[in-house]
Length: 198
Image 1 (cartoon, rainbow, N blue to C red):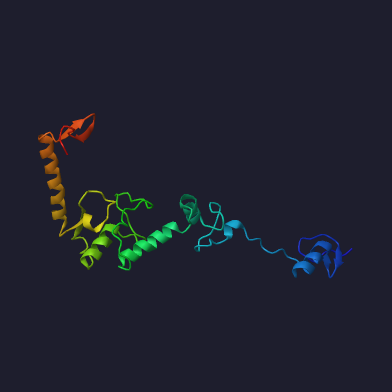
Image 2 (cartoon, rainbow, N blue to C red; image 1 turned 90 degrees about the vertical axis):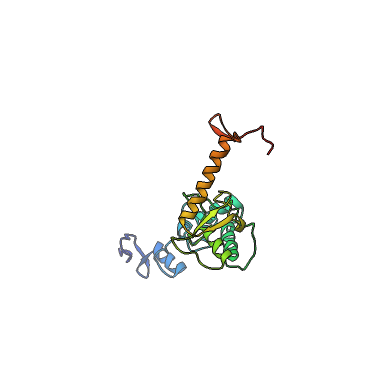
């Protein structure tokens, strides 16, 4: 009895040197070998070139799927980053953009753009119309809130010494107001004296 010509197949031949299984597959698919199945995790995201893989869903990579679950729009952060870039490039004027709530600050408390440059430095460069002098000029947040990158909250210091002097002035003012009882230390916290009419 003739055996199927396909390697490792021991079934008897039905036609054209192939067993029944391989013969029918050859007629149906044009080849007796099974096509490689495309697994879900091998698919590409519909919004980028990343793979869907096990943590993705709905034809979205993990990053876009996570954004979709959080904001209801897979491209929400991408749109915000593009909008921010248009503001920094001067295509859009918007002084209220820089209270960022959708993007976490880095370990040093500042926020970076998609090019990993500090947002407050980019805004200052736009404000003064030139690049900052690297390792010389320093941008100071007037209200000490590193997340408040509005142009009117940023001050350009000529050097690090000037920036340190501003913080020394603040420390001196704190000492002054503590001495004058305008600032009190109560229950392990500093508070403004409630008796003051502020």
